[in-house]
Every structure is written in C-alpha cells, then in structure tokens.
Image 1: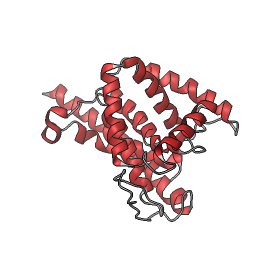
Image 2: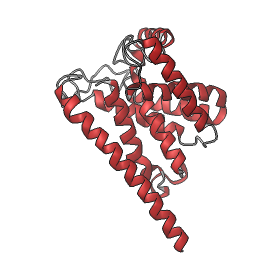
Image 3: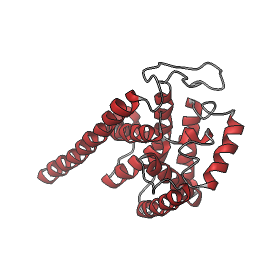
Length: 239
C-alpha cells in the first residue's frame, strides 16, 4: 500500500478507537480520557505512525520525507531489519514502538518531542504535503509544518501516545497483509500472512476504492467525534 493510504488508515483507526480507549469497563485503569485537543493530536500521530513500518524502505515515502537524513536512516534500518517488509512489518514491532513511545513521552520528553516531530512529518508527507517534485524543498516544508504542529502539541498531555503509535503501526501491517506479498506478522517466525484483497500496490483498487473510502471514513468519524463531544457537553450543562 502507498503512503497516503497508510496515513489515512491510521487516522481512521484512531478516530474509531477513541470510544474504546476511553472505556473504563474495557481497559479499566489503562483507559485514557481524551480532550478534543488530544483526539486531534492523536489523529495526526496515529497517521504518522501508520507510515512508520516503512522505515525499512530505502526509497519509500519515509526516505523522501526529510531529504538525506531520512534516506540514510531508512537504509540503515532496512539493513538491520532484514530488508523491506521484514521485522518492522510485524506485531512485535507495533507493540515495541507503542511501548517505546509511551515510555519516552512519560520519562524522556526531549527525546519524545524529537520522535513526535518525525511522526508528524511522516503523517504530513503521507497525506500529500509537498512542493513540486524537489524532495529537498518538500522536506523543508514538512519540517516547518511539523515543527509548528509539535509546538501546538507542547501543552497537551501525551498519556495516549503509546496507544496511537502502536495502533498506527498495527494498521500499517494489517493493510500490507491485504496485498499479495503479505507481512511476517509473527516475526521472527518466517511465515507471511497475505490475504490479497488489493491485487497491486497503487493500483485501481487502492486509488479508486480504498483511498476514497478511508477519506470518507475520516470525515464521518471526525464529525461523529465532534458532535458527540458537543452532545456530552450539553447534557453535562443540563444536569
């Protein structure tokens, strides 16, 4: 699947998961109560995290996000992880990335802000923020936009960060499992899971069916979340 599809799937997954993440009956002490600002921030972070498993691809969307910096990073990760769609395309990576993000947000904020900058930049690039065809210009635009968004997030409680990153990575893996090549979901076990509902990456199915459906899903879920908050506030004011 292509970057925009992954980013949209992350946004949809986060907005759909918000009621579950706030459910004390389901998650008990692990539930998080999310403000409108946290929901919006989580949407951006989850969209970026839904790009993250492709950090093993030397010429993918991530590699072209911040110019030479991300190109080198992706080459290194690709070699260490065994190549494209290997270790980073697994549930173990999703859980590890989520745990790491949550731990950094709670214990090492300066490092977390650097990671957050990367995730926001990935989400923006995945959603198509770019200037012409010059990757250096696009990288500069992404860096400026990502810095502005991260600055806006500075005062937002990040207790939800681990959930957003783990969910985004898991949705990426699930999406790539819908292509013929599949993913080693249970890595380091070698077996690949593939349910080829999408015959070809960037083919007609992805461009004309999956992407529009995900875009519509983001709009519907965002409206549902906003309206739900308004109704809850109104009921609280009437109590």
